[in-house]
Image 1 (cartoon, rainbow, N blue to C red):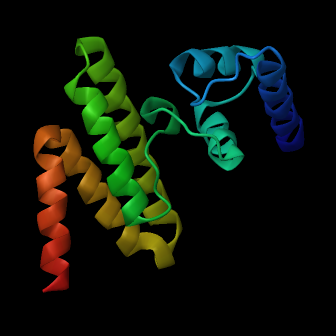
Image 2 (image 1 turned 60 degrees about the vertical axis):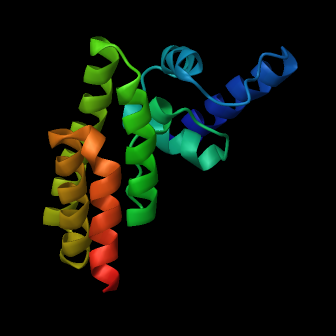
Length: 149
């Protein structure tokens, strides 16, 4: 199935390029079109495929990246900007994305002893973001500064 979905995504992107509709960034309209075109597919799997494509992704398409603390910080700051300028529905959507990522980090911490400390730190960052998104950028700056001292 993995190869099939990857091939379907490549075909969709090629068709967009031929139709001169290929966007500079995969945004929410393209996300919705891809979810429909590649059904059945999970949001998580589609995100992984899109990230692997190397194409620029809008914050809500890219989601919360957890491959490193740097990637997590960057994605949470980008999502904060979406949250800050969004209406109630958009804010709820951003929060759901962060909550899902936090739950995934919790699962990963339980599954892998070697990643437990890093995933617990990531959960703390996401919980801080969820408790008070406007405070997060400054909080994470101070947290990182405390590690260096």
